Length: 477
Image 1: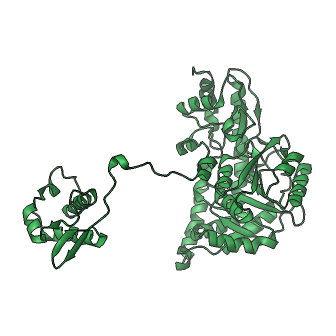
Image 2: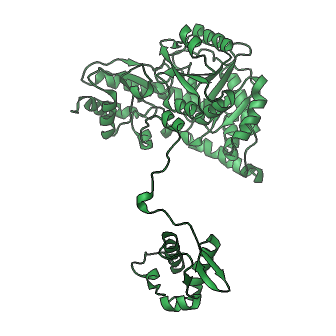
Image 3: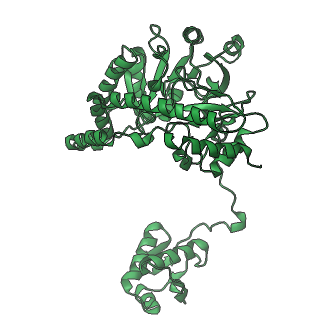
């Protein structure tokens, strides 16, 4: 049998002969070039014919026999009887994602845009306290043992849960115990847990309109039916028809600083929402993603803890206050359900990052976290002021700017003649990262504007960045 084609040129550089022989023999068997039952030469004969070492052939034969492609017995080595691979013409497309995933997914910009001026939700990474964070990490690693290399305890590292409970009691006025805190792999992971553990597939989940697209994705992938509720100047504004026709099991809100409109939910609206949720048997998930950067006076009290036994789960994250790559967030639950939720969450996910959690607990306990938040509030206030001033100085039509009472972004409203998706595309070509406001909405709402992040905006280059943005608004289509 002529098998010299097994090592015929071209021979790829850097691939050992034994692996190349194995790969080509395997392809020949699976592709039908070597028919089932074909007897292959003895290892010595094939090695001599190909001018290679016998061990090279033995490696290929033994590997293919272990995979079931060859059969080796006292009669020799033969090609196994395998089902033939379908011809290329018969190969169909892969099945694709589930219908649930396809409907839940939202358009999303490239991740590289996160480093560009005006990218929303990006903190001032240039001001990150590397020295104090590195010291906390080093202390955590020095104290680490083999247990910290495994999965974290259900609910997260006890030290971090205790540090967070104390921090929230101080800055948000919560009467919360460590046992009510569950550490998550970020906001998305927390929302996924809430969707799966607090609701059933097919239940209605209310989302803000406009609202955070990634949150809609998390709820949709859990099988919940999304119902978009309009937002006004006082936050989420459900009508009597919303409560009657699409009664929710889950209500996702950002009351401290609605994303992306910037509205702050009034106290009256907060109390109404809690009362409506109680009557409907619904849970409220309060995403308090950037209340730490409140300006213009103290933040209103959170929904969580506003009323005794309110059906509210409080969600927070360190992605905005520290850095997104940390991938740590948390949920604060009512005491009555905290232990059951924690046990279920531990079975639904396998938490990790034990060393990072320990370092974060140390970082909080030593006061570095509070000090960092204080510095960032001042920095973000200066960056927002620089952006507003640059928008006012640049020539061009005056456009409405809203938001900015907290958080890291403003909304720049565009006239109908300037579709926001097109302006965002042009801005990206000019090295900017604003997001079109229309991407945050669901029908029947239609909005036209840009979400301008200023967390990563260099104040000294604000005028130059706004000049590029103006060019994106005037460039020909």
